[in-house]
Length: 277
Image 1 (cartoon, rainbow, N blue to C red):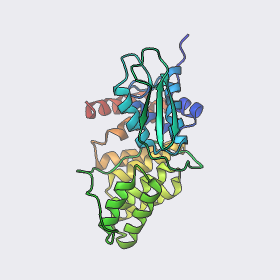
Image 2: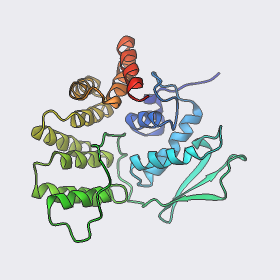
Image 3: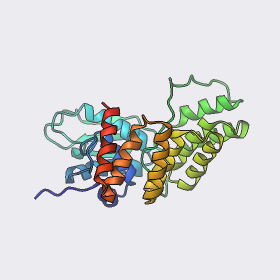
């Protein structure tokens, strides 16, 4: 008999926030993208343990998802992330295939920069502000708010702690920068400090009450905290401001499915699929 697990049940079993599991489903790392309700297998749970192992090693969740998605693209057909043994060693993540048909020569070493593990697990994926292109390297020590933001963006993946400090320095010089507040809040959330993240997103909304990204990210925090009604209201407000915010539709579909409102769940998952075709 085949047993399936919901995103919430899987999150509880593995020790990841539910939103992190939802993000992995959307990325195609586990389950079926766009399926509501999510039905995860025991094999999917093993793949999620791989995600958690990297998070426990101190790697930012967004980078873990991005790198695992890249690895998955190069795996032979029928091979799962669940069949890979992962360990962080010497500033790198080493992945060894355990399946006899995995066409990986020896070990695949990925150049991750390890940061100290946090006392609490980071929440799931929050929404980033659109970026036209990576900022140019800053040669001299930052002196202006914009330069500190550029430095922070360069540091986000390899040194989130230093990136947080850089965003704080930018905001000290220019506290009216909504982008800096949102990026800082996202980093706080990913480090497990939901309270600081909440305050940053609220500061962004004080400056720009029509910022859909801030409302969406507040919704993620509320959903991870089990405040479903608050999360629904925040996601709805985000969609009023930005109807093309696909992630909000997906999360609403999940929440409505859990509450038994199948009609609303179907409506939002259909909108999600339209936007992600």
